[in-house]
Length: 145
Image (cartoon, rainbow, N blue to C red):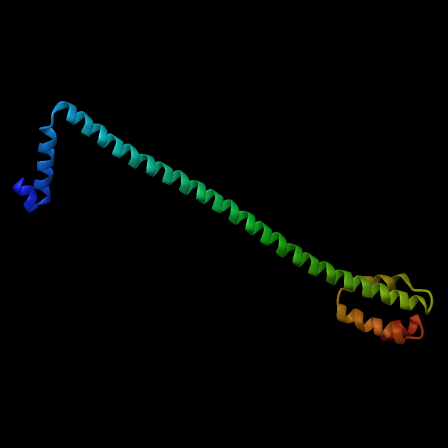
């Protein structure tokens, strides 16, 4: 007891603990071992629950991240698609406006229709639209374009 109170060193304290356990009566030993088993079981259970919770949390985080990433990607794709679609729609609209203006000046050759409809540069189409509005005939428009 005196050595225990003085706290001499850990090795000696462990040895004293082992001696105390060895000197216990049989019913006391059984209760102590049952207590130690309970402590070990509780520790193992906590580790098991922690691992399961961690795995579940990681799976949920992965799923949420994937869903958010897919939603963001879909939104970005839709925005890009709408931008491209809008630009293509404007291009087609300008080309059709040019053709409508030129129809008021007479018959349109098929190669002229094809050229106007195949043009993708909006600046060029804008210039042609102004030119079509100022032209007196289809031939004048063709010469100036």
